[in-house]
Amino acid sequence: MSIEWTKDLNTGIDVIDEQHQRIVDYINQLNKAIIRQNDHLVGGVLIELADYCVSHFAFEESLMLKAGYPYLKPHKATHDMFVKRLKKFQDRYDQGEDVAAKLHDMLSTWLILHIKQTDMAYATEARESLLRIVQNKANGGWLSRAMSRFFE
Image (cartoon, rainbow, N blue to C red; front, side, top):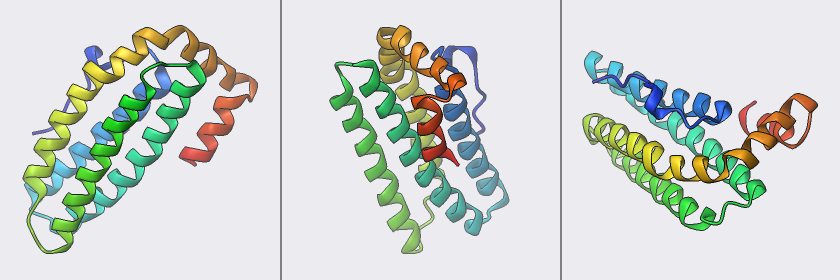
């Protein structure tokens, strides 16, 4: 089943919301691969999603660090656990196991819960600081350099 982006997933930080929407796009690509029974496409999505998530998490964590978010360490731990779960799926896929449906279920559930609970907590608490950092992008400041480092 495809995931539809809804307003309740918006953190209020546009750059983060755009990145989350891209992850939703990957999940929806995986859904298409499942429908088409295209195992090669499943593998491609898995690789791209894992790479993108690592970059997104590093970017998100750097924003939290700059904002002085006090719960960065446990938030990072949830990211690290997710990356390990993706790696396990990649290993199982590489061994020839059909992981597509279980991967899709895990991704869909994890992303929605992570955004609504964990990400909303830091966005709510650190929004003012984060918005100042994000606005710095227009001036070619820290965020602009960080985005080019992570997402180009």
